[in-house]
Each structure stands twice: as C-alpha cells, then as structure tokens.
Image 1 (cartoon, rainbow, N blue to C red):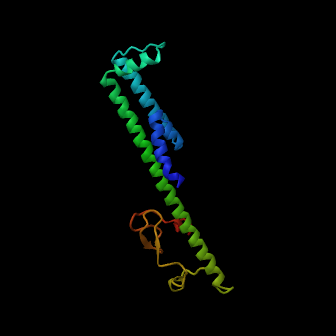
Image 2 (image 1 turned 135 degrees about the vertical axis):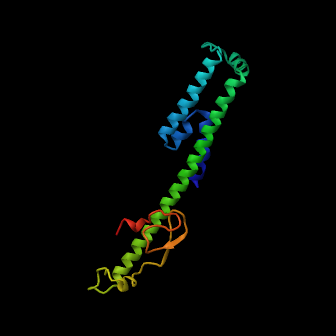
Image 3 (image 1 turned 90 degrees about the vertical axis):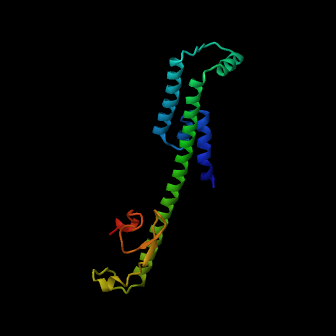
Length: 175
C-alpha cells in the first residue's frame, strides 16, 4: 500500500525542486538531467531576455519582479517543471509494475521448486534421475500450462519462453 503513494510523492517533490522527485525514486541520472535542464533552461532564458536579477531584493520586491517576468521566460520553465513531475510519476508507476512482475516471477520459481521437491520425494529411491526418453519425461510433475510472470497469460510449461510475449521463462536458465 505504501508503494502506491511513491509516484505521487515523487511528482509533488519534482514540482518543489527540480530532480528531487527522481531522487526519491533512486533515479540519480534522471534527477541530475532534469535538474540541469530546468535550472540551465531558466538561466539561459533569463540571460536571453535580459531579466534583471538583483541579489539584495526584499520579499515584496521579489514578488513584484516575479509578476513582472515575461511570459516567454516563465512559461517554458513551468512546462519543464510539469514535465519533470509527470516523468517522476510515470517512472514511479513503472517501478511498481516492475516490482510486481519480479514478485510474480519469484513466486513462480518458488512454486516450481516446491513441485520439483515434491516430485523427488515421491519417486522411488532408485529413480532420482531424469530420463531423456520422451515417454518418461511426460510423467514429470510439471504442469501442462503455467502463467507467464511477464504478461500473465497461460503458456506451455514445456517451452523455455512465453509464446505470447516471447520473454524467457524463469526456469529456462535452469536446464
């Protein structure tokens, strides 16, 4: 449940300070890129339009100056802030989906390992080997169809890849 709020928190923090939302998602490169893009773009626009910047300005004078900024300067900066927040939100959602996919893969491997352990216990003591004979291989405890951890569709357990999304199945590397 807590993971559901991370993308929203990242978007809000990205609006507060450029790159901060991506830092909370541990995307260091994106954070640096967004920060440099927004700050560099702002500096370039201020220099291009000769907006006076005075270091000793009171709060009321700063508010008046901000209201007097040309739209050609403020609009691109606001758009970059918004794009940074949207990107932080989408990256956070993609992280949640990837984590769910990884959990499903781990669960599929755990179930497969558990079924292999059960199969080894059920076999007679002299039959602890796997035969390459197809007639003997059909007697495996492997289910006929399994759910693909990547796309979630049913696929043939005898294949090393999902025939729907063409991603390799977790047990493809074991054999």
